[in-house]
Image (cartoon, rainbow over all chains, first blue to last red; front, side):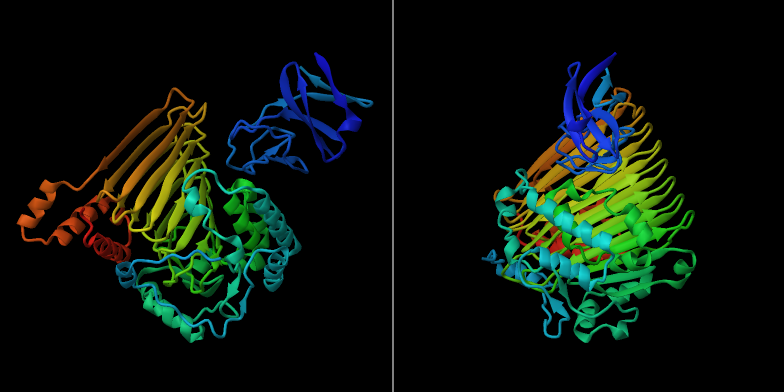
Length: 100
Length: 472
């Protein structure tokens, strides 16, 4: 089921936005116009990633610097080891939908 | 104001590495304090590429934004005055490949520390860092022919920038902790090792680190990559002069053992007792790879160091052997971290510590087994020996086991030297000091027997010195 999550204008390229979809915290990440959705949860310490810096396709956890690939959810550097969950994201016009 | 630390006279006499050389004739000595200008100056003096300059400046911001740790020995940690430290001190103009070309003062220092002798006897390569930069470096020709790269990190950045850029800070990211960020901003020196696939470096590579300037920070950065099926043993030692004010040593060491590779990293840390030794060491071990940390801590005022191994591929193996001795005014807060992230991975942690003359030891460890690491096995053993009523020891193990099909063993003990043991040894004609030293050396035997002979002899000698008058 597609659930409206945010407006594209709220997530400019190179930025992220935390939304809650069907009770789950999702971090929308705009990489050069393509929007990806990952769980807003660092698998190292269980904290949120939304204050982390997005560098290309990588987001850095603001607490211990672990990097995740927002296109696949893969953990790229310690101290994180496990991937974060990903969501299917669809953009129609100015609307971002997350598959719930 | 600098922290005033008055070492007891007996310790001053015992610390034979405590001599100080003249600093006249130094090539560069930065002002005290950490500023953007100093970071830019370091990068400029090293003629670094733009990406490294940006890396340093971003790390500086990260360092400033991170609070000091709120765990561990916060009282001592907060004695560090970051404005009273020189972040870059360059004793000579370059790195020499012949001892004859090293400036006389520095050469005499390393002669006294026995480095050239060790090189002749049993090493494959040597790197000697004095203050912020490596002043002497050599590697055996046959290894270079096999494609082994062993150089200081500054040279690696110049001659192998693509490898450095690819791997630097991928094991320990800049924002991992406040001191990793500090190192990333002002790093200088350290070792770079690359061992090509299938090559075995049969005798050890060694680096020696020496601080000579008061209120100085040494921030070496080491990166070791063992490619598939290769093998290497790296040894580091460190000492500093006796000063009344504190200096800071904050290194970052990253190891990558690719499939089937093996890395052993041995440290004998014997800083003078006013050095803050805050080091981040981490290794990645891929499929069927082995990483071993052999970590000895005798010196420093406060050490906080927890070598870690991430077992990333099936069949990877990790072992951490560590020993710590804390005497008067010292706190050795050391430990080990093992992360099992793949099936059939195995690990062993053995830690032994002795506290005497009011010293304090802490074992702080983590074992984590992730879901899916089926068949993971780990064994942790930590033993502490407390020599008198003024001394203390803490054991703080953490275990996060999220895979039921794994095996975990943990064993810990705290003890005193038994009266009966002492009586027995003394009844055979040993003095109390000799009997105590013998028992403590036996306690550390698991560690000493893993060292090359020269280091084993030196460690036993140091332990004996520390034990004089230690039974309370």
